[in-house]
Image (cartoon, rainbow, N blue to C red; front, side, top):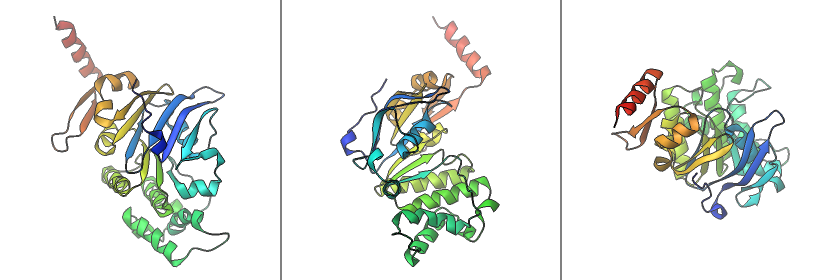
Length: 281
């Protein structure tokens, strides 16, 4: 197993020896990870591998039973919620809206950590919210109600809210799960731009090809532990992926971009591969 610890002292977001177990089973054990400013790190793994648990630990929703989280050098557990929100923006997997906010109101919620007391949003806050919507291709939705939107449109609005928050660390939990191909690409183009501008980004992904195209490094989980971690091309190998996901995959290079391409193999393709292997001397 590759070691996920790389210069944790310089990390914008770091977890050391993180452990958490649910009463019903599942969780994570002994997870080390770090995300530095200027990079996109992908958190990958099959269902039940611990990705969502790690997101909750890293954002302070859950308290680890072992290990600790550091955010911009400080112990996360010692930080007030408002200060965490100024440092860390989260795009959840399935955002919930308990009130029928308008889209612009929803994005303005990202500005609340920066407001003093009961202060109202300023013209600058409104401008930042509108700019975030425009950057996500959603400015035309500004006057709509959030509960009138499709799942994909809501996801773009939640991403805009995170942009408006202006936090130096961004935590994305399967942000492209409801988006069509165009908006998946646009979202990760924006994510890449944020990292290139100095943000630290940790993104939970199911799409291995998006991870290969956009992530500087990846962390591969299996059974609540780190199965492999490191530079994307060195980590998304046939051996690592087959072991983590429990199925055969084909890994090659994209002729256009030079990034890896990962293709799952059908039962028929797996049977043909097994037959070819058995025929080899």
